[in-house]
Amino acid sequence: MNKIIRLLFFFFFSCLQLIARSQSQVEMADNFRGEGKIYVVIMVVLLLLGGIFFILFRFDRRLSQLEKQIEDKK
Amino acid sequence: MKYLIKVYWWKPLTVILLIYTVIGGFLMSAPRLPILNETIRILHFHVPMWFGMIIMFTFSVFYSLKYLSTKNLVYDLYASQLVNIGIMFGVLGIISGMIWANFTWGEPWSNDPKQNASVVALLIYLALIILRGSLQDDHHKARIGAVYNIFAFAVLIPLLFVLPRMTDSLHPGNGGNPAFGQYDLDSDLRIVFYPAVLGWTLLGFWIATQQIRLASLQKHLDYE
Image (cartoon, rainbow over all chains, first blue to last red; front, side, top):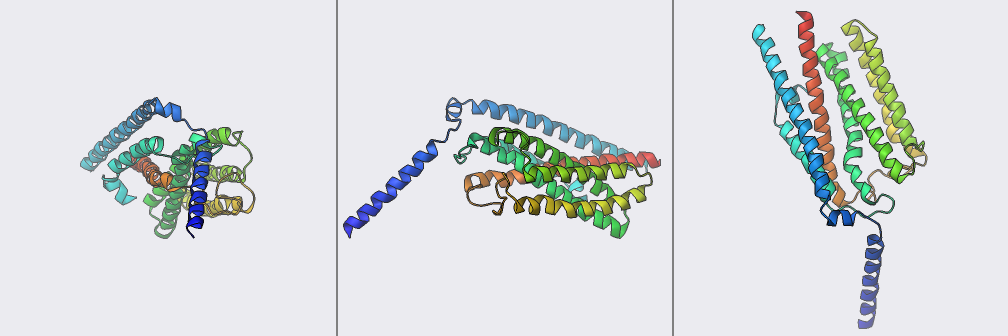
């Protein structure tokens, strides 16, 4: 019994290892991340996003002003 | 729509969700998949475009129906502007998909059934804009536009969700498979993907409300 459990454990863990190895073989941008360059990309994208949001908020405010002017005119 | 125009709270929410999408989408762990490699992260940017498009078109049909039952031109304004934003999402989805496909499928356009169907769907919706532009009278434009919009949506659903599934497709979730099998969307991706869908959709609503407000201001000036 003990032997079978041991065998099963061995089988299970070797399977896990195989899965892990096959997964780490897929090439990802690990180096690029390791060097911290991904933060540069994120900073640039966030900056652009911030610009878009700035324009959206400003346009919102301008629209509210115009709507108020029309309300006052009535 | 009226509620979204009146209240403010969802705009900061959009900002937060999209910032989270960028940070989470680039930094959180993603599954290591062959062929896709690191480009799996495009999921958070390409797929929400289509979700956004479908949600915009759905709301647009809702307001078209509401226009037909009430004959209130405000609802027509909502419907037409939502269609515009939906088309914008669709075009961005196609272009981003082509860029992605160039790396994963080997060519930007491989005549994948879903690619073809989405272009057909977008052409149908572009025809709606042309149809509306060719009519002069506001109520005339609104009524014909609303009826066309309902038919266009009725064609869109089989084009995007039924027909690609009946043949083999390169898109995941097609060719007989359910769309969100555990192999193509794992839990690491989900925690960024769903907020991303919400964030991009709210951004679409944001732009739509601005267009609606601008158009109604213009109408005010026209009537004066």
